[in-house]
Amino acid sequence: MGSMGYTTFDPPNVEAVLSSKFDDYYLGTRRGAMFPFIGEGIFTQDDGAWKHSRELLRRPFLKTHYQDLKGFQEPINNLLSKMASSKGVLDLQPLFFQFTLATTTALIFGQPVESSEDEDQDSFARSFDHASWITTLRSRLTDFYWLYNPAHYRAACKTIKVFADGFVNRALSAKDAGKADTENDRYAFIEDLYASLKDESLVRDQLINILLAGRDTTACLLTWTIFLLVRHTPVLERLKEEIRSVADTGDDITRAQIQKMGYLKCILNETLRLYPPIPLNVRFANKTTFLPRGGGPDGTSPVLVPQGLGIGIVPYYMHRRKDIWGADALDYRPERWEDPNLQNIGYAYMPFHGGPRTCLGKDFALTEASCLLIRILQSFPDIRLPPGDPPAVPTGQEKQELTVFLKSAEGCRVVVG
Image (cartoon, rainbow, N blue to C red; front, top):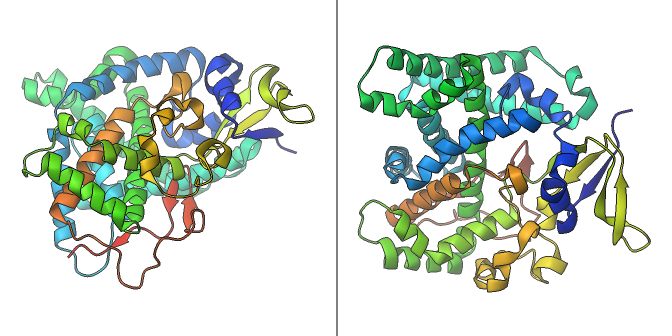
């Protein structure tokens, strides 16, 4: 019963599936498993529909690359205020999810969810978390995803759609009413999509697709980064010194300053290596094809991939291979990224996927993570591990939670005062 499949964490095979033989693979059962949640969007589409969606979404993300970083200020200040008012031990993980929800909704909806009524905001966030978890379970059922469609899942998906519909309607109403240019600019993301799609439900679905990726991936990156920094104080101290040398004026952070912080980039790279937000991905062969490695007595010959076979791609394991990363592959050592040889490591490192489906929001995610980390360490230079909490443990022995994304099951406990 069900589908057979292969699992690979060999860079040549990963490159074949994601790039050189991209057209030989498709999403398969993932579309059906995710559709009630995120609908008709870039993460449930293949072929022409996917190409059209990617082109539509590429344009607004390109715009963000050239904008200043003021859009992050309000969500950052809100998070810092919550940190300042905390007493004793503080778990930053839920605050990071609130932060990335605010930044992503501000980008795609025109205003952060934080600006909504508290009850609506909480209902949306709870429904989003629940729908994400159930979608993960459905995806694991592969061909039998349709067997698990509980009422509470359907209700959560409906809540999400109704909430997103409200923003779409508001944006289009503002356009029809000829509101001021500043208000129209706020809803530019939605208006650009509607100008091409001409369908409000399709616009809504694309927005939910972007929200799924934009909220959880960056929140997981921020969580694991602070989780590791407070357990590796030499790394933390070196980062604080770099921040002081580049951006210790208290002024707004700029892209130019972030680009000067080479060690911060090393830290983010190393966190993404050990804890890729999406540790597993799956593709299905749409025709009989082959992988370049895995066959023969020594596993170095091509291997046949029959039509319909699933291929599990596992960056989580690939990023920890000692034959690629060295004997210290399991160690958290940001300095490894100062080795110029790692600049061209290719498909051995793919925290943002690879090939034609490389994440459109990569720059947005790394920039918002960098801004927040800088501001946290400027505002709370004494941030540390709570007394009694376990120090660094061997990589892989910390508690992890896997939904669609790789979260910390221990949260991110710190003391900031």
